[in-house]
Length: 299
Image (cartoon, rainbow, N blue to C red; front, side, top):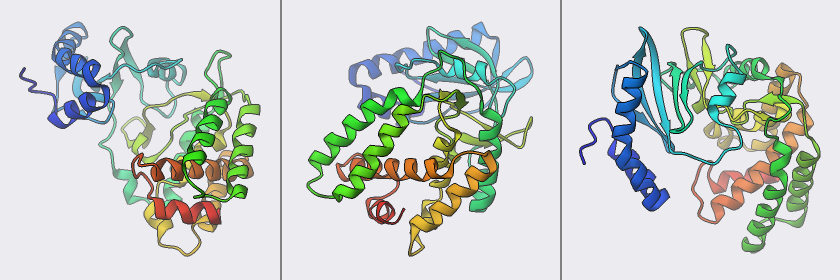
């Protein structure tokens, strides 16, 4: 089938990951996009972009630059559309329309991605802290909670440790496990982005910077310090004591967001431990095993 708007690499990733279900979704995607373009009276305004989970098509909506996002359907307790409606008119892109059956979103256009790379590490943390503070609103009572994920996280940690053959000391593992249990005891009342890294912050017109892809979960603002401050891995890899530098950055983020730096440090350590175990088991190389080994011993 001809897919004039569909990047081949994106189709290959979806099919490889999702097998026959992914192949069926890819086959139907051109028709899905055509129907949504007609339904919302859109004008295609550029080449399609794609990530690991969804197709992004630049469009014009009532004369306004927008994007049509059609993600591969995932099982989430709350949809991205719900998150964007809840965070409406704050430091994230606006939701213009949603098709819940197809999981499709019509969004305010921001970007392109990448301008945050021109910022220093401290400048980036300042930008992210401003966004995190603006998005930190009282959470709806039925919002998904970080605390609900702690049980699964601890089970995953135990399984990873059993397969890691002494990669980490008992003290490092115990510290991570206690942090995970502390996350499970904190059922916070604040709504946070949940995945605030540089790839999810774009330059924009309405504000200098806007966030995309909020998971919008209940939890401490300090949770997002990990992804904010560990974005610049190349900087951290070049210093003798990456833990000390990361602690300084975590404290900067927490000072600017009036959040708990000790919580941020302990969560960063536990998430680094999980990342190291994941990468050591062949689960990809987001941060790099050698760097993570140094980090968990110095943080």
